[in-house]
Image (cartoon, rainbow, N blue to C red):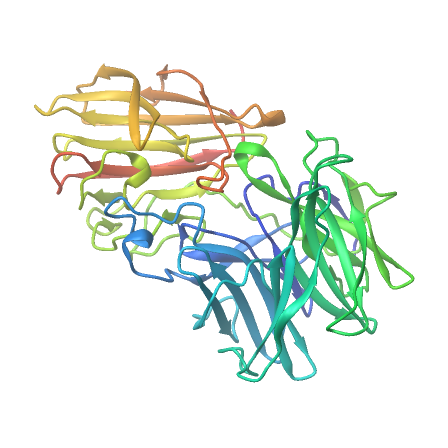
Length: 503
């Protein structure tokens, strides 16, 4: 086995709340997906550095106005939170809570890369859960500040009627802004280890990683601060996640760091054991590069270009819809070689438009471009390319009440409305659209362009300041959209989407 060089961050894109396991020689990860569908992406890697998406836990998990993004309702900032991935016996498990549904979900499958997952629903919120299999029993440890433990039936499909369901312990209050949460639970070396983050008000005043341990599941627990480091990046603590071992017996922590508008990005941290305590990093710091005894592997793109040349209506795994899609209103088959998005309901903003198809953006810089055909849009329609967060910006075509077309750059105008920054009369039936993103050192700027021929590009509007806020709780995504403000039934044909990690 050859050594590889791991460089942090390993993925410069939004992959928050990672939960990582190893099965044989393969590592698997699940992360938070909130309002993006399909949800709970499953990624795999041979070396903790190069990851590819191989599956999703669900296509959708509820069917209501909020999940369908209709009637002014939504699940922005809610949906699936902080999943836990575990393997026990011959079965993979993923569990999470949904803040909008006030329910706890457990999914399981025997084939993590190819199969569909079986779902169980348990009433009640179990914040930031971690599953723990222990001598034939199944526990979930969860909570914020008040850390609780519940026991599930052996099949992990329901609460065990006479099982443990109690407060495990309370974490520190004094001087703490965000109390302990984000549990990752393990039983190793005769100890129970519970990893958390908290956010103290004093000291460095940033998120940090803690570990609680006990030889008894129900305590008492002792704890230590394992990591309080920002890698020199704007006091953004590298924290929240768990640990995993390699076939060679080495240990690593898999954590994430806030990087403002691009999102929460994963880092790998070396771990050694001293007196049965895990010790993170080198002298308390996260190394930016280090050698690991892991195999080399091919790098697979997280964000892809797509020519939309499909023989069935099945998305590449890199794409996700903004909320549940209406599968009657999009197609690769209606016009082969194109993605067709047809309008089916009225709205006043891209933030509430159904069937917006998105991918992540990546740092430090990236660029997405599309060719859009617009002659089947109806009066009042809007179609184009969006930098999608609560504070969004888009470039595309606006159709006036009389059918006149304009190329426009629009932003969130507040209170659910859009503000047109600039619009220009546009006569052609097709238009090239481009957005450039600059996330270097949290500059977080999106710049918008259009072209009639794909050669000569014109800047439109102004560079837009992207912002990571808790409204969406997600890194900026780039998306293709079409929505109606006056009448339904118009459609937009996207010829392709092309993406680069450069400007």
